[in-house]
Amino acid sequence: MLSQKVQDALNEQMKNEFFSGYLYLAMAAYCEAEDLPGFGSFFRVQAMEELTHADKIYRYICEAGGRARMAAVPEPKNDYASLTEVFQYGLEHERKVTGMINRLTDLAMAESDHATRIFLQWFVTEQVEEEANFSAWLAKVRRVEGDGRGLLMLDQEAGQRTFTPPPAGQ
Ligand code: FEO
Image (cartoon, rainbow, N blue to C red; front, side, top):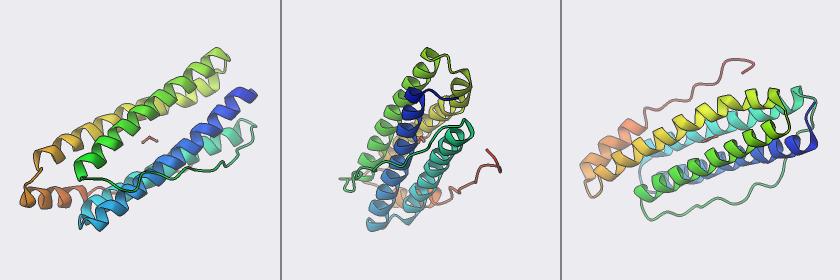
C-alpha cells in the first residue's frame, strides 16, 4: 500500500517522465527543421524511451493499489541556438531528473516503503546511463562544430539509434 505522500511523488515523477518525452520531441523537431534527420530520429527514440519510463511508473502505481493521475505537462523548450545547445540542455535535464529520482528514493526510505525503494533502483541505474549517453554525445557534437562534413557523418551515426521496447511486463 502506498502512502499518500509516496503516491503523489510517484504521480509527479510519472508526469516528469512524460515531460521528458515532450522535451525530446521538441528537440527532434528542432533537428528535423535544421536538416539533421538522423538527430531527429535519435531524439524521437529518446522520447519513446521516456514514455516507457512513464508507463513503468503508471503500472507500478496501479499494481501497488494506488491511483495514477495525469497532470498538465508544461511546454518544453522548442528553440535552440545550435545542436551543441540541444545536447547541453539535454544533459542538464537528465541531471535534474537524477536529482528527482534521488529525492523520490529518499522519500520512499523515509516512509519505510521498501517496495517502492526497490522499484526505483531501476531508475537510479538508468539515470547513470542517461547522463553518460548525453555526455558522450555532447563531446562528439562539440568535436564537429563548424565542420559540415563531420556533422553529416555524425547525423548518420545518430540516425542508427533504434528503439527497443521493454520486454512484456517490464
Ligand atoms: Fe526518464 Fe531520461 O530519464
